[in-house]
Amino acid sequence: MSADLPWLTAVEAARAFAARRVSPVELMQALLARIERLDPQINAFIRLDADAALDAARAAEQEIAAGRVRGPLHGVPVGIKDIIDVAGLPTTCHSKILVDNVARQDAVVVQKLRQAGAIVMGKLSTHEFAIGGPSFDLPFPPARNPWNRDHHPGGSSSGSGAGVAAGFFPLALGTDTGGSVRNPASACGIVGHKPTYGLVSRRGVFPLSFTLDHVGPMTRTVADNALLLDTIAGHDPADPGSTPSQARYFGRFLERGVRGLRVGFVRHFHETDMPADPEVTAALEHVARTLEAEGAEVRTVTLPTLGEFSGLNRVILCSEAWSIHAPWLRSRPGDYGQLARRRLLPGAFIPAGDYVGAQRRRLQVIAAVEDVFRDVDVLLCASSMDPASRIEDAEETGRTYPRQARLPFNVTGHPALAMRSGFSSSGLPLSVQFVGRYFDDATVFRVASVWEKSLADRTARPPLG
Image 1 (cartoon, rainbow, N blue to C red):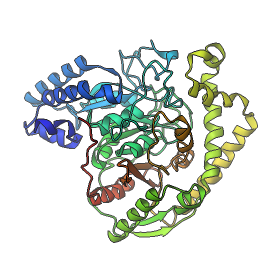
Image 2: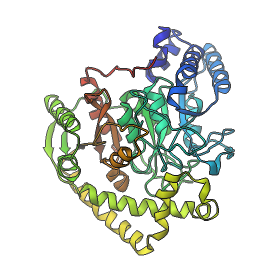
Image 3: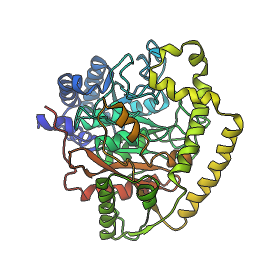
Image 4: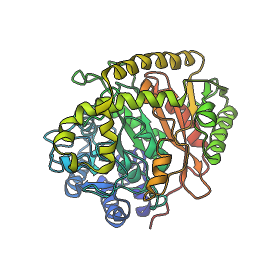
């Protein structure tokens, strides 16, 4: 049992605590020992708060003994991407600019985690300001892919994806502006969900793009992902992008199957807009056949092209990011890493008319996607078009990084989940993406759960020591 402790899911851990088969202290000690031994190879953590995490585990154990349980994540460890505030810890955004920036209070999502009983283990690697990476000219090294440490773990929530996949914690929070929860999920073979825009508060999270940013759960299983979303979702009047919603109990359909569901397969994303690696294409077709065998109706559908989505995302993201970073880029340009500086500076040259035009066109592409959702319940499409590149091959990473179909759903705000679809011949995870109607995240989890159950190698673990 001790060797398997780091691989307990959040659901399994909570049940084991309740049944007194495992204590929060035993789990935390197993995780800390694994992190001490293996994280020097992975670099998932910027700041491991080991003493505080162990103290919190002892307190959780005492509360269980006294019959007091704070919530469904009582005693369950979680890692936090280092653009999300945790009181008393630096929020560095992986940058020299904010290396001494100690948060005074928890972000709303961290407050919700603590209220549910979760234990924060520390702050996790990211790309600089969630845009500049993977980089080797920053105060901290980039995270690496546990399936092959020579490869990229996806970004920008790189430490979150790598740490979950490596068995350092069962739960993590990431953020997603152009795919930054779903990219590490795809590269590291875990489950990453970008919730419906406005479903999760972003207060206390350093922004990249006000109208594209999302906070999302990253886990090893679909059930854990739904449980984590249950915990962090909810209206926040102090977040201008937050939307009042009745959406909750996101795992309520996990056992319902997909019989009768209409699945729209967006084949043109990976067949014509951006032709994918043949292994990615084959895996996507296998997902479609599996859902059909389980009773879903799969039909081909057409959305605006990836090129159009990409152009809109680029104009909106660069314009909004420039509005945030302009003072530092003018006064401290040398304190940015090369990649972040290169990706942020174009925002200075985008005319206001182009930004307004992009926002107007955005409404039209949203309407086009909504029109497709009149005839289907969920979309199936590619996430990454290639397996993860070698992390030190800057040219190959630069080529493959934008080869993805995630950013359309930052532009539209629909809920989107990425997870493993199989493995490449070289042993790296391949991925698939499921997309739902606004605030129907539960149906996305429903389809993902059926696919997860069909994976013969769903319990595969990275080849770490």
